[in-house]
Image 1 (cartoon, helix red, strand yellow):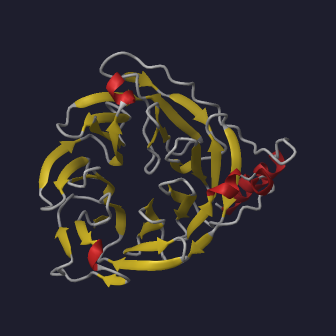
Image 2: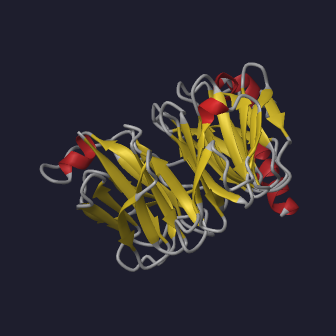
Image 3: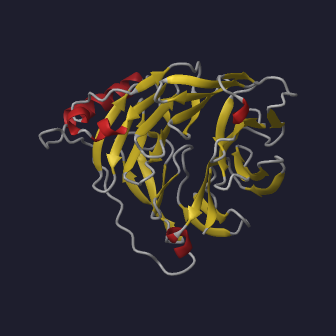
Length: 364
């Protein structure tokens, strides 16, 4: 078992998505055809890699076990701004305009359309046990949804699913969203802040302010360190154990953080922490992917690509990636994603879905 680094970049000259052995940089496989929208690269179990095509209502699907291939195209009801998969691989959530559509993947059934945002939904995240889904977007609102209500056909079929809670503390668009431990969700924004929300208490428990807009973040698996990428290309490490409520980190000599001022020449688009908590990987609009030691923040390796880095994902190689080096594995066909929800009387509720999507388009 080893860690695999998945990369997508904007040029699409050599590949759309490529995978590498994270320990030695050896190429494992490449998936060609088109490019991938930021915040849409996902792995479904050990079977598929999916991403959204920019400015089109289409996701592209690749089988992990097939080393080189063109993607299968799956149509969605609108242009996609974000994608995520539940940790058990059962649910697919997509941000389309200012709505979030949630499908059950085994049958391609549209379970619900979630509406709490006024602008495009650009960030999505499931918590560790898939009991909550967090959403955020260009309006700066962060909402958390109870997934059990999404499964409830009586609620979702009538469009009555409401957020468990919403926060309006960001003053500009959010740029990333991720659940941590103990039902806590982190969000970053162009308003130069990272905020941490406690789901049970519905409170903001930490707010960290930076000198520049925050473009991306990630944290070590035990949430000891937070790594923040900024719009000026700097990389910052914050010790989360030293902060309990509000931290205003603006001085360059702050003992609670470390800064690499010129980590990248342009905006940092992606950060991914290794599972052992010793390495982080960053990607940028400068076309570079860099590996960093968590303790020293020294760069140990640099990979250069033709276009902007749009997505990075560190994952564990088990069956799927291992089979690209040997025998093929058999996977179930990827389902067609239905554009209509199922109502309580087992009939499609097409009028509801059409109405909600039209409202999104009218707003834009």
